[in-house]
Amino acid sequence: MSAAGLQARALGCTMGHRKLFEALHFTIDAGQWLMLAGSNGSGKSTLLRILAGLMSPESGEVWWRGAPRKAGDPLWHASVLYQGHANGWKEQLSTGENLAMQAGLDQGPGTFGASMQAIDSALERVGLARQRRLAFARLSAGQRRRLGLARLVLVRRPLWLLDEPTTALDTDGQQLFAELLDAHLDAGGCAVIATHLPFPAAREPQALRLGNGR
Amino acid sequence: MSAHERRPQSPDHPDDGHPGGEPRAEALPALAAIAWACRRDLLLAMRSRAELALIVVFFVLVISLFPLGVSPDPTLLERIAPGIAWVAALLASLLSLPRLFALDHADGTLEQLVLAPAALPALVAGKVLAHWLTNGLPLVLLAPMAGVQFGMQPDAIAVLTLGLLLGTPTLSWLGAIGAALTLGTRAGSALLALLVLPLAVPVLIFGAGAAEAVSSGLGAQAHLSLLGAGLIVGWVFGPLVTAAAVRIAYE
Image 1: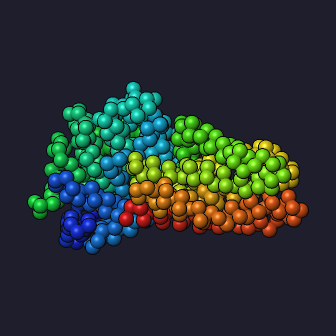
Image 2: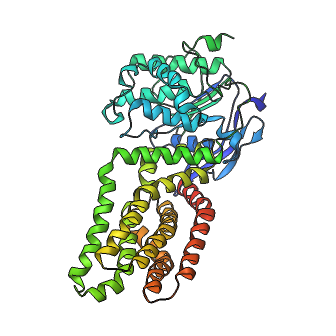
Image 3: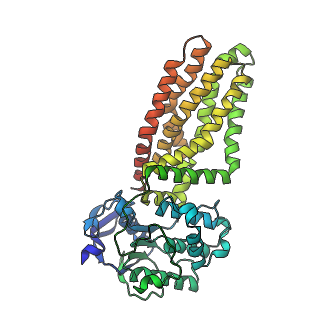
């Protein structure tokens, strides 16, 4: 049932004179995830940005739940959670403030004061409870990644588009991410994850290799 | 299903859509989006107060340079005071404009804004409102001081302040459009100045003209009406144009 998930139909993209990919097809149904691999510069991030609707592809379409997805459609934006290289955290704000701000944008204005509890528990889940009041600028690279995981805990969206979510995470962090991903897929979510590092997820991904290997 | 129990915490989100179920389509309403963006930028501005002080000091310095550079003659200074205040306000607003979107662009916040379930024009409007509150409003409040410094008549000072109050948001919108268009370009801030300064000329003419008209005994109503019209046009079309420009930056 292709209506349930994300579908790429004949996607193509060129950067300058170089063809990154063309005629790319894949289908991810509910509960499945796609692992994007490929060398540096092979177009993994570009593909994620195209899927998210930040960029338009040169050719082809992205379908979501049986209809072409349009950038700007609120239903689409309420379905997708995208995390690129830069996560949009502000160095001047504390860890908790950053997460609360992002949650306010993701979920609506009611979450500012109302669900500080939810924010606390999300931070606790990813092991940042003690850093809640610490300025984001003082977090380590791995802790910054963990704050990204806290957003995955807090904001529930059926489709995850994640760019290298496990870089800089320690083994515990990778285990934690795998658990979050498993729970997300068990609940019928989909995910497209660009990664170099295999991590211990319970479900086997579909694999897509961009670049020369394809 | 066991899926949800596997998450140790199950906070009661108001819109905790089951990932497999239909997501709620309701987006952040426009006013809430404006409030969110404005609140966030004000909070960030409060964390870097030195930058705010910079603008004010810059404005005061530029104004104080004119008597030194032009002439200490009081009648001449009184005549050119509105122009000085406006040019200084324009330059001061240019000072902070390059950072309006560039910082958010660099750290990925802008991507999240573009992808958020809220109208991008509303989010942009909130950002520009916060920018005006932190950069434009202080200049408006300082304008009477500048007027007194140059020995302007009280009614001319009032009109100058009113003109700045009407005109600086328009400058913010012109700058926001320019800042969004120059996102990701090298030498963005120089380009921004080249782009925005010519467009700001009408605002400058009518703003400075209003105070001069009062000083020379004519009414300032026509000038102020035109500034007000610019303000309305800015707030109506500015968000849409700026949002489009931000989207172009990601193409």
